[in-house]
Length: 419
Ligand code: EPU
Image (cartoon, rainbow, N blue to C red; front, side, top):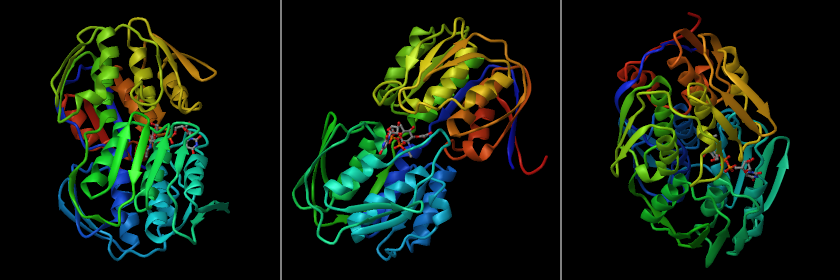
């Protein structure tokens, strides 16, 4: 198993290019199932979840050609209606997008229950509610989801009972070829939802989002496109927690600052010096930042995917803070690992109180992707050499992590195997 060693205590300084957004690359890759002809997807982040998605398509018979380090040509004209790669599918939440795409293209989908990061039950009843309202029959049997329709799906109005990125995306995908206008209400408005809509519209779809309502007018077919994925907001914000915790400065290049603005305001209030242009953030934190209280919630509010990293940052702040988790009530597996490093944290029902702490180096385990990113933050800001196990979680979502951190002056090494 790979592990990271980090010799912390030094300020990070420098600049990095933000990679393409994992959480939009994944639905866009699966959405190519609905396009005829070649598509070229650019700014693809080379992270394991993306590589696994491409492998799932390849095993279904798609033609995948790597054009350069971040561009891939995908052609799904001859894919099979049978989904293979069951083991990969059960590892990844985003494989749930095969439900909407296969239903739209073949009228049926049969796949293992999608897996995903390890922070509690992740139901899909909102996805299935949407498919059912469109006229499909949905069943769950022996850890498989079976969705099918004998008749053409029918456009209708679907109101989600709770805001869900995955259900929003899946219902849009299922609706693309339905005659008439499908209306989806109470939708997620994360930048990755808009990125997918932008991609589909470039391929000939007719989708409009007004606030939390999406109108999808069915079209006969979609054509191949050349499309560039938006920059990854969570990667960008993660690096700001690293620089905030170690007390340094960074220029984030190739980012979309509009997507970051809610959290950048919080960093400014905590005392960081934040300058933005449309595509760049200049961020400086030359003294310990003040604390902050935050509650995670759907975009445009504080992202759950920054919760663990922000908790690490608060350990190094002047007065700590409270994080309430409003999306995934059990996303606290990282707490025990940070406590192994001496973090003072008190966990309550759905929240964590973080006190300013003097951390020490330790051997810790990443329990999921963002938990792993949080441990990196703590290790970078703590004197001594820390070891982080289970790197496989972290490489699901952070491209070129060790090189990016090294380029900022961080002392990080990836050890392969049993070293
Ligand atoms: N939910 C339901 N029923 C459903 C669907 C969702 O109860 O049918 C609940 C979930 O359990 C959760 C909330 O609704 O409490 C929101 O879940 P959502 O469906 O929005 O999450 P997701 O689509 O499964 C995506 C990202 C996650 C990110 C969340 C929230 C992908 C592949 N995953 O998951 O990303 O945390 O949205 O923004 O896009 C990550 O990148 O580390 C990650 C976990």
